[in-house]
Length: 273
Ligand SMILES: [Zn+2]
View (cartoon, rainbow, N blue to C red):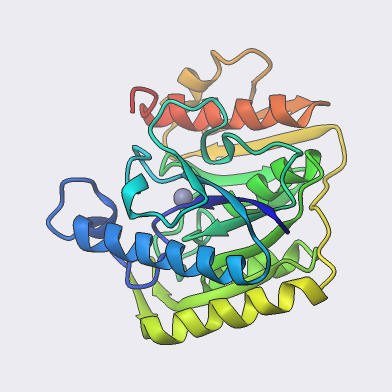
């Protein structure tokens, strides 16, 4: 557990409940960004106590410039900015002993998960080999093909269910309880810190397996608008399966992952971010 990769998103951070927290430039954003930093530093320090010596952080939210290197502890390097071909998983290689997902959130379509979505709001529903997935599951499968176990995932209680469904032994830390897509019951930060330390202290004595899905990989995606499919069908290999749905199949996981990133980016118009 010496070399650890951390993908850090914002919607699942303790205290964050509103679109206003997650939008760069909003008056509420700077507070949320500082909460994100503080939660991440808590996690890094707890892993250091368990033998972590090298940390690569991937800023995984929106423009991916939320975290600042001078606010990080020592022994940390930070992947900052976009574009990154593999987005929230950029920089994850088989050299890591484990991966950690902080500030993650419920999958697209969950009404009572705080700020639920899967990569972009253009995705209404997303399945991989018949499994309704969120960012946690898809990104864990990315780690799985590299042989890297996901040690811990944090966010709300609805996300914790998705983590449990992977059946890998991955620890989940609950920092809030979802009430609606834009409301949650927040735990006190002191309690959140204790929850992290407890979970991270348990990891050395827990069997945690990489999350591995079987090839071939079939994506079945429903988009919010029919014309989004017309745009996404420009991606080679995609086929329309309904008015607002499309499919992509490939035997290679990374190709499938990148097809999904392309579908959500093209259909949401976020490819210039
Ligand atoms: Zn996200």
